[in-house]
Amino acid sequence: MRIQSGSRRATGGVRGRREHGMLITGQIALTMLLLTSAAAAINGFLRIAHTNLGYDPQNVMSVGIPVHQNAHVSWEDRANYFEQLREHIAALPEVVSAGISTNATPPWNGWIKEFEIFGQPTAQQQQARLNFVDSNYFSLLHIPLLTGRLWEHAELMRGARLCVVNQTLARQYWPQGNALGKQPRFPDLKAEPPYAQAIPESNNWLQVIGVVADARDDGLRNPVKAAVFVSFSFLMYVHTQILVRACRLLWDERHA
Image 1 (cartoon, rainbow, N blue to C red):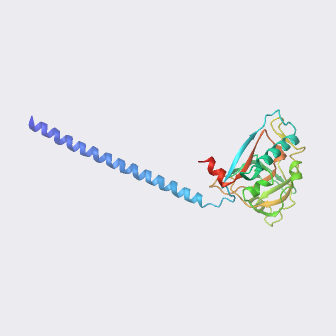
Image 2: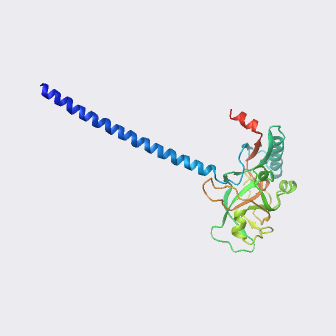
């Protein structure tokens, strides 16, 4: 009995040491896996941190502005309403600048739309990211104007058929540097009342008046996509966004 008991203890001791060793091995393997994953995440973060965004997000926040579909039913009324809100926000002492951005909050910008270019054959799946913004949008995000000009206030408020394109689109379709004056159009850019109000003949030809530098518009990892910017008043939904660049003090207080 003693011999059997000792044998059991010896067997149990060996089994216990084996199980303990397996547990330690498993813990080491799990630790190494977590360390590897953490290192990969840190490296990914460092790559993103050193990525040239093309815009300055510091102290910028987005304020959503909803509108009931039965309120401000004409596009003129809706444009004036959004602009008045922007002016009130821009006048706050804590605010450096404010701009309207219906669907262009980087790094995910615009809606992918098929478009045509006057006088050029349409390529299969010729697409660009269509953005609805105002002139303040670019200066607020520190996106430089490379050539041409932006909209004047009167042009914004009447929904003039003028557009700005990014550098990627200009290089892709007008590599000789002659983008200004060219005429793109988006055939399916139409009103959807009462949800979306648009200027008359909103799917007619536009005229390029400016080219801006590239800024991330398809996430932080993907190359910049071709983009067209039109006046926010061109097509207005029952919501928009106002981008606000605030003073550092306000930003810190919101995150305290």
